[in-house]
Image (tube, rainbow, N blue to C red):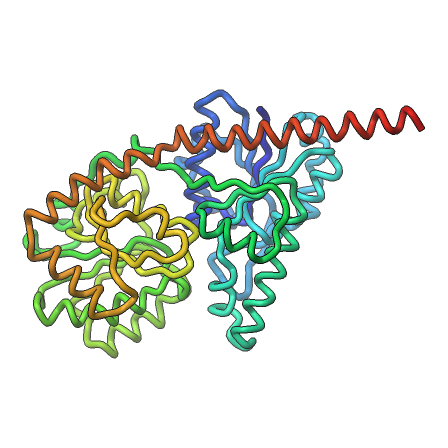
Length: 402
Protein backbone atom coordinates (compact mmCIF):
# COMPACT_ATOMS: atom_id res chain seq x y z
CA UNK A 1 0.00 0.00 0.00
CA UNK A 2 0.96 3.63 -0.48
CA UNK A 3 -0.20 5.71 2.49
CA UNK A 4 -0.21 9.49 2.90
CA UNK A 5 -0.18 10.33 6.61
CA UNK A 6 -0.86 13.92 7.70
CA UNK A 7 -0.37 15.43 11.15
CA UNK A 8 -0.12 18.80 12.85
CA UNK A 9 2.59 17.36 15.12
CA UNK A 10 5.58 15.07 14.67
CA UNK A 11 9.10 14.80 16.02
CA UNK A 12 10.98 16.78 17.21
CA UNK A 13 7.70 17.72 18.95
CA UNK A 14 7.38 14.99 21.55
CA UNK A 15 3.92 13.72 22.54
CA UNK A 16 1.70 10.67 22.24
CA UNK A 17 0.61 11.44 18.67
CA UNK A 18 4.21 11.69 17.47
CA UNK A 19 5.10 8.46 19.23
CA UNK A 20 2.07 6.63 17.86
CA UNK A 21 2.77 7.79 14.31
CA UNK A 22 6.43 6.84 14.45
CA UNK A 23 5.70 3.42 15.93
CA UNK A 24 3.10 2.54 13.30
CA UNK A 25 5.14 4.10 10.48
CA UNK A 26 8.21 2.02 11.25
CA UNK A 27 6.18 -1.18 11.42
CA UNK A 28 4.26 -0.41 8.22
CA UNK A 29 7.53 0.14 6.41
CA UNK A 30 9.06 -3.01 7.84
CA UNK A 31 6.11 -4.92 6.34
CA UNK A 32 6.81 -3.47 2.90
CA UNK A 33 4.32 -0.61 2.70
CA UNK A 34 5.21 2.85 1.41
CA UNK A 35 4.56 5.79 3.68
CA UNK A 36 4.80 9.56 3.23
CA UNK A 37 4.29 11.83 6.24
CA UNK A 38 3.27 15.48 5.93
CA UNK A 39 4.15 17.39 9.11
CA UNK A 40 5.05 20.94 10.16
CA UNK A 41 8.45 22.47 9.70
CA UNK A 42 9.73 23.32 13.19
CA UNK A 43 12.00 26.11 12.05
CA UNK A 44 14.67 23.77 10.77
CA UNK A 45 14.84 21.76 14.01
CA UNK A 46 14.54 18.13 12.93
CA UNK A 47 15.55 14.95 14.74
CA UNK A 48 16.93 13.14 11.71
CA UNK A 49 17.75 10.04 13.73
CA UNK A 50 14.08 9.46 14.48
CA UNK A 51 13.20 9.84 10.83
CA UNK A 52 15.82 7.50 9.41
CA UNK A 53 14.18 5.54 6.63
CA UNK A 54 10.97 7.57 6.78
CA UNK A 55 9.88 10.02 4.13
CA UNK A 56 8.80 13.11 6.05
CA UNK A 57 7.85 16.16 4.01
CA UNK A 58 8.08 19.28 6.15
CA UNK A 59 5.41 21.88 5.40
CA UNK A 60 6.11 25.56 6.05
CA UNK A 61 4.36 26.61 9.26
CA UNK A 62 3.85 29.39 11.76
CA UNK A 63 3.71 29.53 15.57
CA UNK A 64 0.58 28.69 17.55
CA UNK A 65 -0.26 31.53 19.94
CA UNK A 66 -1.79 29.42 22.72
CA UNK A 67 0.90 26.73 22.58
CA UNK A 68 4.42 27.85 21.55
CA UNK A 69 5.62 24.23 21.31
CA UNK A 70 3.37 23.62 18.33
CA UNK A 71 3.33 24.86 14.74
CA UNK A 72 0.47 25.46 12.31
CA UNK A 73 1.05 24.23 8.75
CA UNK A 74 0.26 26.51 5.82
CA UNK A 75 -2.20 24.67 3.58
CA UNK A 76 -1.15 26.67 0.55
CA UNK A 77 2.45 25.51 0.91
CA UNK A 78 1.34 21.88 1.09
CA UNK A 79 -0.81 22.23 -2.03
CA UNK A 80 2.21 23.41 -4.02
CA UNK A 81 3.34 19.77 -4.02
CA UNK A 82 0.13 18.56 -5.69
CA UNK A 83 1.86 17.28 -8.82
CA UNK A 84 4.11 15.14 -6.66
CA UNK A 85 1.15 13.76 -4.69
CA UNK A 86 -0.63 12.82 -7.93
CA UNK A 87 2.40 10.93 -9.21
CA UNK A 88 2.69 8.90 -5.99
CA UNK A 89 -0.65 7.13 -6.63
CA UNK A 90 -1.50 6.90 -2.92
CA UNK A 91 -4.10 4.33 -1.86
CA UNK A 92 -5.50 6.34 1.05
CA UNK A 93 -4.96 9.27 3.40
CA UNK A 94 -4.60 8.82 7.16
CA UNK A 95 -5.19 12.01 9.19
CA UNK A 96 -3.72 12.04 12.69
CA UNK A 97 -4.82 15.39 14.15
CA UNK A 98 -7.95 17.57 13.95
CA UNK A 99 -6.55 20.96 13.08
CA UNK A 100 -4.92 22.03 9.78
CA UNK A 101 -4.09 18.38 9.06
CA UNK A 102 -7.78 17.45 9.06
CA UNK A 103 -8.82 20.07 6.54
CA UNK A 104 -5.70 19.57 4.43
CA UNK A 105 -6.38 15.84 4.38
CA UNK A 106 -9.98 16.30 3.27
CA UNK A 107 -8.93 18.74 0.53
CA UNK A 108 -6.26 16.37 -0.78
CA UNK A 109 -8.74 13.49 -0.65
CA UNK A 110 -11.20 15.40 -2.83
CA UNK A 111 -8.54 16.38 -5.36
CA UNK A 112 -6.87 12.95 -5.46
CA UNK A 113 -10.16 11.03 -5.12
CA UNK A 114 -8.91 9.00 -2.16
CA UNK A 115 -10.59 7.54 0.93
CA UNK A 116 -9.75 9.04 4.33
CA UNK A 117 -9.09 7.42 7.72
CA UNK A 118 -8.68 9.54 10.86
CA UNK A 119 -7.41 8.62 14.32
CA UNK A 120 -9.09 10.39 17.25
CA UNK A 121 -6.08 10.85 19.54
CA UNK A 122 -7.26 13.65 21.84
CA UNK A 123 -10.25 13.66 24.19
CA UNK A 124 -11.17 17.30 23.62
CA UNK A 125 -14.06 17.30 26.08
CA UNK A 126 -11.53 17.25 28.94
CA UNK A 127 -8.82 19.15 27.10
CA UNK A 128 -9.88 22.45 25.56
CA UNK A 129 -10.88 24.32 28.71
CA UNK A 130 -7.32 24.02 30.02
CA UNK A 131 -6.20 26.31 27.20
CA UNK A 132 -9.25 28.51 26.57
CA UNK A 133 -9.97 29.49 30.15
CA UNK A 134 -12.03 32.60 29.41
CA UNK A 135 -14.92 30.43 28.15
CA UNK A 136 -17.25 28.47 30.49
CA UNK A 137 -16.24 24.84 30.88
CA UNK A 138 -19.75 23.63 29.97
CA UNK A 139 -19.63 25.55 26.68
CA UNK A 140 -16.19 24.17 25.82
CA UNK A 141 -17.44 20.62 26.42
CA UNK A 142 -20.44 21.22 24.16
CA UNK A 143 -18.21 22.75 21.51
CA UNK A 144 -15.70 19.87 21.76
CA UNK A 145 -18.45 17.30 21.24
CA UNK A 146 -19.96 19.09 18.23
CA UNK A 147 -16.49 19.66 16.78
CA UNK A 148 -15.61 15.98 17.19
CA UNK A 149 -18.84 14.78 15.55
CA UNK A 150 -18.38 17.14 12.62
CA UNK A 151 -14.83 16.00 11.96
CA UNK A 152 -15.35 12.27 12.48
CA UNK A 153 -18.44 12.16 10.25
CA UNK A 154 -16.49 13.93 7.49
CA UNK A 155 -14.09 11.01 6.96
CA UNK A 156 -14.64 7.45 5.73
CA UNK A 157 -13.42 5.62 8.83
CA UNK A 158 -12.49 6.55 12.41
CA UNK A 159 -9.90 4.83 14.57
CA UNK A 160 -10.26 5.14 18.35
CA UNK A 161 -7.22 4.29 20.52
CA UNK A 162 -9.42 2.73 23.22
CA UNK A 163 -12.90 1.37 23.83
CA UNK A 164 -13.97 4.29 26.09
CA UNK A 165 -13.12 6.76 23.31
CA UNK A 166 -15.06 4.64 20.83
CA UNK A 167 -18.05 4.66 23.20
CA UNK A 168 -17.80 8.42 23.79
CA UNK A 169 -17.76 9.17 20.07
CA UNK A 170 -20.83 7.01 19.49
CA UNK A 171 -22.58 8.79 22.35
CA UNK A 172 -21.71 12.12 20.75
CA UNK A 173 -23.37 11.06 17.51
CA UNK A 174 -20.55 9.83 15.29
CA UNK A 175 -22.09 7.50 12.68
CA UNK A 176 -19.13 6.58 10.50
CA UNK A 177 -17.53 3.10 10.73
CA UNK A 178 -15.15 2.91 13.66
CA UNK A 179 -12.60 0.47 15.13
CA UNK A 180 -10.59 0.39 18.33
CA UNK A 181 -6.87 0.09 17.53
CA UNK A 182 -4.46 1.07 20.31
CA UNK A 183 -0.88 1.96 19.50
CA UNK A 184 1.22 -1.13 19.98
CA UNK A 185 4.57 -1.20 21.72
CA UNK A 186 7.79 -1.72 19.79
CA UNK A 187 9.36 -4.09 22.29
CA UNK A 188 12.76 -3.95 20.58
CA UNK A 189 13.14 -0.36 21.78
CA UNK A 190 12.13 -0.99 25.39
CA UNK A 191 14.18 -3.96 26.54
CA UNK A 192 16.91 -2.41 28.67
CA UNK A 193 18.09 0.74 30.39
CA UNK A 194 20.88 1.87 32.71
CA UNK A 195 19.13 3.02 35.87
CA UNK A 196 22.27 3.31 38.06
CA UNK A 197 24.00 5.26 35.28
CA UNK A 198 21.10 7.69 35.10
CA UNK A 199 21.15 8.26 38.87
CA UNK A 200 24.90 8.88 38.77
CA UNK A 201 24.57 11.34 35.86
CA UNK A 202 21.95 13.36 37.74
CA UNK A 203 23.59 13.18 41.16
CA UNK A 204 20.89 10.99 42.72
CA UNK A 205 21.87 8.77 45.63
CA UNK A 206 21.84 5.12 44.41
CA UNK A 207 19.68 4.11 47.39
CA UNK A 208 17.17 6.93 47.08
CA UNK A 209 13.60 5.78 46.24
CA UNK A 210 12.46 7.30 42.94
CA UNK A 211 8.99 7.94 41.56
CA UNK A 212 8.73 8.86 37.89
CA UNK A 213 6.33 10.65 35.57
CA UNK A 214 7.09 10.74 31.84
CA UNK A 215 5.02 12.87 29.50
CA UNK A 216 4.16 16.33 28.32
CA UNK A 217 4.04 18.73 31.26
CA UNK A 218 0.60 20.01 30.37
CA UNK A 219 -2.39 21.02 32.48
CA UNK A 220 -4.58 18.15 31.26
CA UNK A 221 -2.04 15.56 32.48
CA UNK A 222 -3.11 16.17 36.11
CA UNK A 223 0.49 16.40 37.32
CA UNK A 224 -0.65 18.82 40.02
CA UNK A 225 -2.42 15.86 41.65
CA UNK A 226 0.92 14.01 41.89
CA UNK A 227 2.46 17.05 43.58
CA UNK A 228 -0.43 17.22 46.04
CA UNK A 229 -0.13 13.49 46.69
CA UNK A 230 3.64 13.53 47.25
CA UNK A 231 3.61 15.12 50.75
CA UNK A 232 1.55 12.15 52.00
CA UNK A 233 4.30 9.82 50.75
CA UNK A 234 6.98 11.96 52.36
CA UNK A 235 5.34 11.56 55.78
CA UNK A 236 6.42 7.90 55.71
CA UNK A 237 9.42 8.13 53.36
CA UNK A 238 10.90 11.67 53.46
CA UNK A 239 13.77 10.76 51.13
CA UNK A 240 11.56 9.97 48.10
CA UNK A 241 12.31 11.81 44.84
CA UNK A 242 9.75 12.46 42.09
CA UNK A 243 11.28 12.89 38.63
CA UNK A 244 9.27 14.74 35.99
CA UNK A 245 10.57 13.88 32.52
CA UNK A 246 9.14 16.17 29.87
CA UNK A 247 8.40 19.77 29.03
CA UNK A 248 5.26 21.76 28.36
CA UNK A 249 3.07 24.75 29.09
CA UNK A 250 2.36 23.82 32.72
CA UNK A 251 5.96 24.06 33.93
CA UNK A 252 5.56 27.49 35.55
CA UNK A 253 2.43 26.48 37.48
CA UNK A 254 4.05 23.20 38.52
CA UNK A 255 7.12 24.99 39.87
CA UNK A 256 4.87 27.34 41.81
CA UNK A 257 2.99 24.37 43.27
CA UNK A 258 6.26 22.70 44.26
CA UNK A 259 7.33 25.83 46.14
CA UNK A 260 3.88 26.15 47.74
CA UNK A 261 4.03 22.53 48.94
CA UNK A 262 7.67 22.79 50.08
CA UNK A 263 8.81 20.08 47.68
CA UNK A 264 11.92 21.71 46.21
CA UNK A 265 14.18 18.93 47.54
CA UNK A 266 11.88 16.13 46.43
CA UNK A 267 11.06 16.96 42.80
CA UNK A 268 13.46 17.01 39.85
CA UNK A 269 12.76 18.21 36.30
CA UNK A 270 14.89 16.50 33.63
CA UNK A 271 13.20 17.76 30.45
CA UNK A 272 12.67 15.70 27.32
CA UNK A 273 15.00 12.72 27.03
CA UNK A 274 16.41 10.94 23.99
CA UNK A 275 14.17 7.98 23.15
CA UNK A 276 17.21 6.06 21.91
CA UNK A 277 18.69 5.55 25.35
CA UNK A 278 18.36 8.29 27.96
CA UNK A 279 14.60 7.80 28.30
CA UNK A 280 15.02 4.07 28.92
CA UNK A 281 17.72 4.82 31.49
CA UNK A 282 15.35 7.21 33.25
CA UNK A 283 12.58 4.60 33.39
CA UNK A 284 14.98 2.07 34.88
CA UNK A 285 16.15 4.53 37.54
CA UNK A 286 12.62 4.56 38.95
CA UNK A 287 11.15 2.27 41.58
CA UNK A 288 7.55 3.18 40.70
CA UNK A 289 5.99 4.94 37.72
CA UNK A 290 3.15 7.28 38.76
CA UNK A 291 0.37 8.57 36.51
CA UNK A 292 -2.96 10.30 37.10
CA UNK A 293 -4.06 11.85 33.80
CA UNK A 294 -7.81 12.07 33.26
CA UNK A 295 -7.65 12.75 29.50
CA UNK A 296 -5.55 9.94 28.02
CA UNK A 297 -6.98 8.15 25.01
CA UNK A 298 -4.53 5.34 25.75
CA UNK A 299 -1.42 6.09 27.83
CA UNK A 300 1.61 4.74 25.97
CA UNK A 301 4.04 5.71 28.72
CA UNK A 302 2.38 3.16 31.02
CA UNK A 303 3.27 0.37 28.59
CA UNK A 304 6.78 1.73 28.11
CA UNK A 305 7.38 1.73 31.86
CA UNK A 306 6.01 -1.79 32.27
CA UNK A 307 8.04 -3.09 29.30
CA UNK A 308 11.17 -2.01 31.18
CA UNK A 309 10.03 -3.68 34.39
CA UNK A 310 8.90 -0.57 36.26
CA UNK A 311 5.71 -1.20 38.25
CA UNK A 312 2.96 1.38 37.89
CA UNK A 313 0.66 3.14 40.34
CA UNK A 314 -2.01 4.99 38.39
CA UNK A 315 -5.61 6.00 38.29
CA UNK A 316 -7.65 4.20 35.62
CA UNK A 317 -9.65 6.81 33.75
CA UNK A 318 -10.79 6.84 30.13
CA UNK A 319 -8.06 5.27 27.95
CA UNK A 320 -5.84 4.16 30.82
CA UNK A 321 -8.74 2.04 32.05
CA UNK A 322 -8.26 -0.28 29.07
CA UNK A 323 -4.46 -0.42 29.44
CA UNK A 324 -4.21 -1.14 33.17
CA UNK A 325 -5.09 -4.43 34.83
CA UNK A 326 -4.79 -4.64 38.61
CA UNK A 327 -1.86 -6.85 39.60
CA UNK A 328 -0.48 -7.15 36.07
CA UNK A 329 2.37 -4.70 36.40
CA UNK A 330 0.19 -2.10 38.08
CA UNK A 331 -1.66 -1.08 41.20
CA UNK A 332 -4.76 0.93 40.30
CA UNK A 333 -5.46 3.82 42.67
CA UNK A 334 -8.41 6.09 43.28
CA UNK A 335 -8.26 9.73 42.18
CA UNK A 336 -7.62 10.57 45.82
CA UNK A 337 -4.35 11.63 47.44
CA UNK A 338 -4.78 9.35 50.47
CA UNK A 339 -5.48 6.19 48.46
CA UNK A 340 -2.89 6.94 45.77
CA UNK A 341 -0.11 7.73 48.27
CA UNK A 342 -0.97 4.64 50.35
CA UNK A 343 -0.47 2.42 47.30
CA UNK A 344 2.81 4.13 46.45
CA UNK A 345 4.12 3.74 50.01
CA UNK A 346 3.06 0.10 50.20
CA UNK A 347 4.88 -0.70 46.96
CA UNK A 348 8.04 1.19 47.93
CA UNK A 349 8.20 -0.58 51.30
CA UNK A 350 7.58 -4.11 49.96
CA UNK A 351 10.60 -5.15 47.91
CA UNK A 352 9.27 -8.63 47.16
CA UNK A 353 5.93 -7.42 45.84
CA UNK A 354 7.58 -4.65 43.85
CA UNK A 355 9.87 -7.18 42.17
CA UNK A 356 6.96 -9.53 41.47
CA UNK A 357 4.95 -6.70 39.97
CA UNK A 358 7.96 -5.72 37.84
CA UNK A 359 8.15 -9.23 36.38
CA UNK A 360 4.44 -9.30 35.61
CA UNK A 361 4.76 -5.83 34.06
CA UNK A 362 7.23 -7.11 31.46
CA UNK A 363 5.02 -10.07 30.63
CA UNK A 364 1.92 -7.92 30.34
CA UNK A 365 3.54 -5.23 28.16
CA UNK A 366 4.68 -7.93 25.72
CA UNK A 367 1.02 -8.62 24.86
CA UNK A 368 0.66 -5.11 23.37
CA UNK A 369 2.57 -5.96 20.22
CA UNK A 370 2.93 -3.34 17.47
CA UNK A 371 2.90 -6.18 14.93
CA UNK A 372 -0.61 -7.21 15.99
CA UNK A 373 -1.94 -3.64 16.12
CA UNK A 374 -0.49 -2.88 12.68
CA UNK A 375 -2.23 -5.95 11.26
CA UNK A 376 -5.53 -4.54 12.55
CA UNK A 377 -4.71 -1.15 11.05
CA UNK A 378 -3.96 -2.73 7.67
CA UNK A 379 -7.26 -4.59 7.81
CA UNK A 380 -9.02 -1.23 8.21
CA UNK A 381 -7.02 0.27 5.36
CA UNK A 382 -7.94 -2.62 3.07
CA UNK A 383 -11.62 -2.40 4.01
CA UNK A 384 -11.71 1.35 3.34
CA UNK A 385 -9.91 1.02 0.01
CA UNK A 386 -12.25 -1.74 -1.17
CA UNK A 387 -15.35 0.22 -0.12
CA UNK A 388 -14.07 3.29 -1.94
CA UNK A 389 -13.39 1.26 -5.08
CA UNK A 390 -16.87 -0.25 -5.00
CA UNK A 391 -18.40 3.22 -4.68
CA UNK A 392 -16.33 4.53 -7.57
CA UNK A 393 -17.37 1.59 -9.76
CA UNK A 394 -21.03 2.07 -8.85
CA UNK A 395 -20.86 5.75 -9.70
CA UNK A 396 -19.10 4.95 -12.99
CA UNK A 397 -21.78 2.41 -13.91
CA UNK A 398 -24.54 4.86 -13.03
CA UNK A 399 -22.92 7.55 -15.16
CA UNK A 400 -22.66 5.21 -18.13
CA UNK A 401 -26.35 4.22 -17.89
CA UNK A 402 -27.46 7.82 -17.77
